[in-house]
Image (cartoon, rainbow, N blue to C red; front, side, top):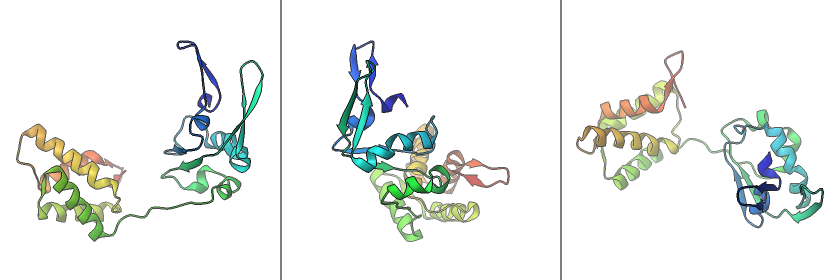
Amino acid sequence: MDMLEVNHSEHNRIWIAPLQMIANNGILVIDDLGRQPMPVATLLNRWIVPMEYNYDHLSLPNGQQITIPFVLTMAFSTNLDPQTIADPAFLRRLGYKIQFQPLLENDYINLWSDLSENKGIEVLSSAFETLLNLHSLHKIGYFPCLPKDILGISQDIIQFEEIAPQVDSTILQRAWDLYFTADEHGGSVL
């Protein structure tokens, strides 16, 4: 919560503006909403009035209060259900809510192909078959973050073992197992 108020740096002997003031006339992105150390309600309640009226009141340590413009675009991202982290009144104040769905299988494979080509790594067709089987087996959607992450782990395995830059079924399975954590039912969770 300190980052949302004016703070003094003893080390530098300067006053530090809060995040929303630094982002003024720009974009403030709060990533992974619901995973901050402070309760989401506290964070959102701090900004509910500034979002509504486009100005914010800041209290200085000497007791003086100043009013500043609050002209910025706020973007919140989360993989949690918005209904569980914010009340309906706040959700109404967020005009646009966009849910990203998993990719279609063909788009997912194309993304894999593009990324592997950019990294100079060949992904064998047997590895693609294994990949699709793993997705089906563990009921995990074709999320666009997965090719980069799993291909990166595959690349690390290839470099560490000093083998040809080729992802086969075995390397893909190892990368998948490293990326996902098995749950108590033997399934994979992100």
